[in-house]
Length: 466
Image (cartoon, rainbow, N blue to C red; front, side):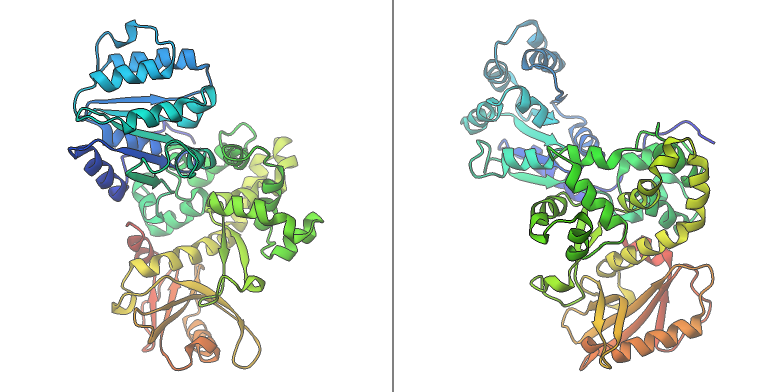
C-alpha cells in the first residue's frame, strides 16, 4: 500500500559540507565544481550549504539562453532588488553586473551547468574571465551537473577555459549503505541490507521508496511497472553522458546476466574484445561497473579480471526487469514481483558480500584495523579451484583476515567454520602469515568458536555510516 512520500532528512555528506563551508567562509573568493550520477543529492547538498548565506541558486534547463538569462536574473533579484528589471543581451552583461554588485561573500550556484553551456558555448569562457578578475568583492561560484562527461570536459580538460580555476572538485557519489536504515525507518539491519540490495545508495531512490510501507511494494510500483518512474532508469543514466547508449546498455545487460569476463562479453556480442575497450572504460568512469581482481593481484593481470555491476540497484534492475521486459509490458508486474520475492535472497547474498568487504577498512574487526578487502579466486595449494569472499591485510602485512559471508536464515555453524579453516589452510596467500578467520552471517549464532569470529548485519552497517 502506498503512502505519502517524505523528504529525507539531510544525511551524511559531512566531508563535502565541511570543504564547501570552508571555501565559502574564507576571505578569498573561490570556485567549486560538483558532479556525479543523477539523483545522488548534488542539488540537496548545494541547498544545504547555501542555507543562511547571500546566495543565488539556479537550475539550468534546455531553453534558449535568452530565456535562461531572464530566469536567472529573477533569481538574482531575490538578492539584488531590481536586478531582473533589465534585459541582458548576453551572459557577459548579466554576470559582469552580478560580479560588481554582489555583496561580499555571495555565492552564485549554477546547477545543471552543462544545460546552460549547451545553449551558449561561450559561457565557460565568460565565467573564466570573471573568476580570474582581481578584486576583493568577487563572489564565490559553484557549478554542478549530472553529466559527468560534460562536467569533466568543462573543468578538468586542460584545454577547457575553466581548467585549474576550481579550488574544490567534488564527485558526489551514492551514500554508504549504513545510512539506509535511518532514511527508510527500517526495523533492523537485516531489513536495511535487503532494502539496500534493491535501491543501492542513491538518496532519491530512498526518498521515492518512503511512499510505500514495504520495499518490495515500492520496487514493484517504481521499477517493475512500465509506468514506474525508475522503470527505464539505466538508459537515462547512460544518456546523461553518452550520445548512444545501445552498446553500453548491452554490455551492462550481459554483465548483469553473469558474463563477467571480457572474452565472454565479446563472444556474446559477436565482436572482438578490442572493440569493447571504449564502452568498458566509459562505464568504469561513470561508476556503473567495477573491475574486480583477486586480492593481491595486479591490474596487469587482465586474464583474472572480472567486470561486475557496481550498483545494487542496477544489479536488481538487470536481474528482475531486463529478462522480464515483455511480461512487464503485458501487465504481469505482480507475477514478476512474486517471483522476485522467491529469488530475492540470492540477490541479497551477493550484495551482502560487497557490503562486508566495504565495511572491513571502516571497522575494527578482531580489535584491529585492516586495509581494503577483496575476494580471492584461483588455484589452491593443492591445485584445485578455491574461492574466498573476504581477504584483507593488516597495516604491516603480517596478518591476514580471511572470511566468508553467508546470507541464510539458518547457518550450519560447525560446517561453515570447518569449511573456512580448510579453505584458509589451502590459500597460497596465507603462507608465512598469521591468519585470522571470520564469518559474517545474517543470523549470528549465540556461541563462538575459539578460532573463528562471527559478525552480523549490525556490525557491517554500523561500520558503513562513515
